[in-house]
Amino acid sequence: MRLALAQLKDTSAGYLFSQSPIKSSLPPPVIPTIEFSPMKPSGSKPAQKRQFTREEVDELLMEKEAKANFWKGTAMQQQAVLVMQGLYTGRVRKQLQAKEVKQGKKTNLKVTRDGLGRVLTMPELMEETAAIEQAQEQATREKDERRQARADHAARLEDWKAKMDERDVKNEKHKQSWVDAVNKWTEARSNAKAAGHKLKDWDAKNPKPKRKAPEFCDLPKIPKPKAASTQVEDNECEHIAIEGIIDSESDED
Image: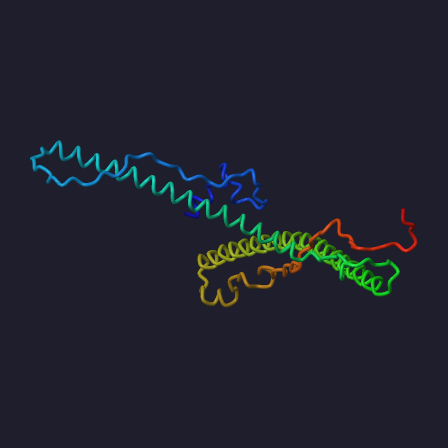
């Protein structure tokens, strides 16, 4: 199943596995339909018994097997489309949920009370408006801080990747140095054996190079910078809407 789903990424159904949101112009996968005759009621007459030849039996068996394979293939095809429809509806549901959450976070900035007219210079109205503006400024600062934190994390991540690449190159050199040292040690050991030296004594004086030795071991992994847990959301076109306000300095027409 996983292999089949992976192969679908390169087909027209690849949008089901993309990170981009699903557009309304992309329809869900359609289950193929098959035309077949309606079910007939079983007859009350008993079936007549007859003798079949071996050729007729083989032909009937082949016909039954072909029908069974056809319906099995049809069932597998419909099950595959049902899986794809589940992927489609699951992604659309997540998009709708994310949209609802984002809309729920928006603050209602309308200053309303009892519906009566207000004057812009009223102390309570000025205090309420100032509080809303202060909350907006605080939200903007926090949003900028989160955006800057993400930018800093991206820079740290690039630096980490460069250091990890450098570490991998050094580790490969350490490994090759160890392989060369082992080959050199093996050759020297063979020469000592050919010269008649006792291998036990020779091994004690010339230990085999170990991969865990400081000059051959791998450099430790560099901790990966952690991503910021908060997500930056941009809510443009926010404004303060004040209903029922009468400007005391303006003249009525």
